[in-house]
Length: 127
Length: 292
Image (cartoon, rainbow over all chains, first blue to last red):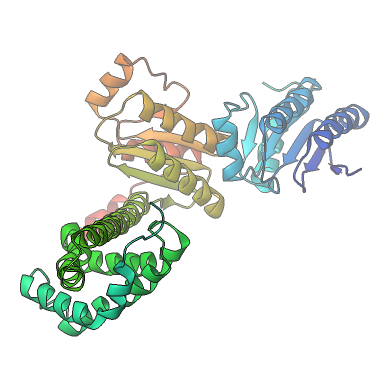
């Protein structure tokens, strides 16, 4: 079965969704990512969905859930590269992913992540 | 009543040339053809082609003008209606093209079947039914041609009315002018989001100075656009809120607290610059004095 690759980049994890997500893939990603965050003690997660062109309500909710889970595991999460069509669909579905940080592209997302981690206090808590 | 029962097809076929001559003469005499815009030769040619098709289709014996046998006639009339519509003819003038065939046709029927009143009545009735149906069809086609022109113009207007301009590298502005309906908002939303990606901008200023009224629907559309932009990682500022509109928004109980709002575009631009950690400073006094 396909897996979404999770790359380690310093103290951050880089998740690049390069195919259209189907339900099982999203569930697998949820498992993999949470495990990987705990294993690697990552402090930041960057989810790049620029190749994702279709979402339904389930995938939309999964995206929100995955981001929320990584936040609970104390990793700052940024979703980057959402396509216009995907953004419109999510808004029309009423899923505006509250509380999730977004950025236009990987560059901007990494800068934002870096910024948030730099502001973190010695205990690793932000804000 | 699906098959032709009378001798109409035979008569039309036999006397096609005479009917055509009389028909063209009548059309030219009626003067409704604005000789300047439609050449006599063209009218003659079109009449000839229609009569040929009509006669050939009559021979098939079908009475149903919506059936496959009549498709050649229908296609011809559709082309004719479209070209007449663009030439500026009115729908009744276009339909008259078909209806005016009745007079020469009936005259011919009477001349050929003079001795049999019943046969004349039957043939006339069938001819009337067919020509009426075809005449109405031209009107329908005419309407469709006009509607497609209107639709195209509407689309062009929508495209024209949603320019996205770059105020500064990384700062986009979307000056909205005119009433926002769902369809237009959809286009606005798509253009804005696409431009955000294309330019890599992180801030968009939506200026609603030119929007005459803001109701709950318009506000909802605006908020949707803002949330979509936020999902993509860009911030939106709404500017150009006139005093009346501010009052309306509050009276309607619309919550715009999630979005930064400014009274004028310049205020919004200043805020956008600030968010991008940019500053506009006056040039030094000496330069100003030297110029003055």
